[in-house]
Length: 164
Image 1 (spheres, rainbow, N blue to C red):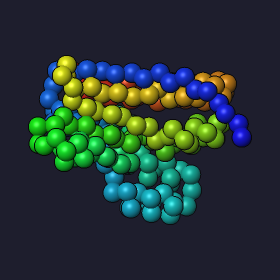
Image 2: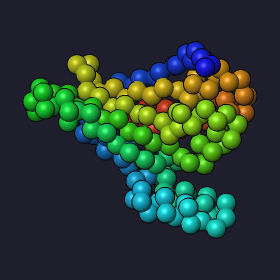
Image 3: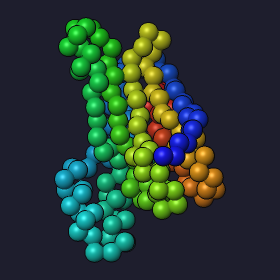
């Protein structure tokens, strides 16, 4: 068994906007394809250019799409009641970016698509993200690191835009 230590760099943006407003701003920027249809269309694509077209139709203006959403706050509210802070975990990304990273560093598939955490705290709504570049740094692939940095920039632009 091999063990690799990875130093994760997490960014957090704090917003004074409401949780609902922040989440709505993110929703406007990322695509929300019907996942059954999306997976079917990807698998049925006869060529790489057709696959790329499927992905381009699915992503939003940020170049990202939502794969899944977990309302973690719903579980907390069962214990604490309706006044409990809201917290949502979004799994988002772009399959074309993922394949470029995974093609160079297969372990990148453990981190892509990425997680965006949006949660209410006493000082505002936190939007948090673990930088892909930090997750891939130990693998030493310069091109994968560059691709990851581009992805990080997309996600960080999404978060800062939603927070403002």
